[in-house]
Image (cartoon, rainbow, N blue to C red; front, side):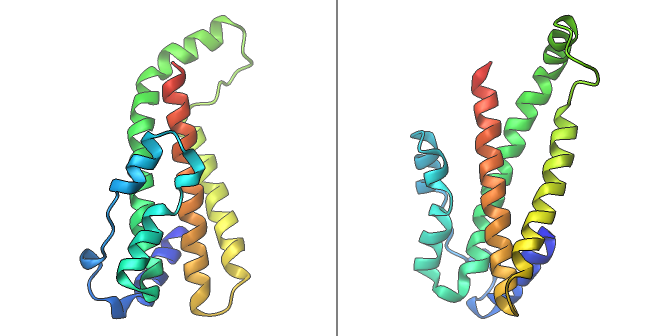
Length: 156
């Protein structure tokens, strides 16, 4: 459960001060993605944040990068949802078996996958490390999903 990971990360990094003081700067991450480096960019922003804020900030820094990826994914979804009626009509015209998957179904299935996969990952860790591992999993899966969505936006 990604919410548990975020809550755990916040509790873990409580000694770092307030969350709005976490030195997450998305500039290098955005430049990396814009340069087409894809998955090589995942974790770049969190690592730089951890270097500036210290090792105890890892959960909050990952959570901050995760928000960046989620916002990127949301922008891509808006574009794809706007194109969805044309895609659905094309699929119908070409005889794609009904029902044709929708962006809402993709989101639902991805959310379920992420929740199970990251809970499974967290279960392998003891104590406070479970939350950090879960947040890392959530961030990485959300990042990969955002990159996949970006590719779909560029296809049309």
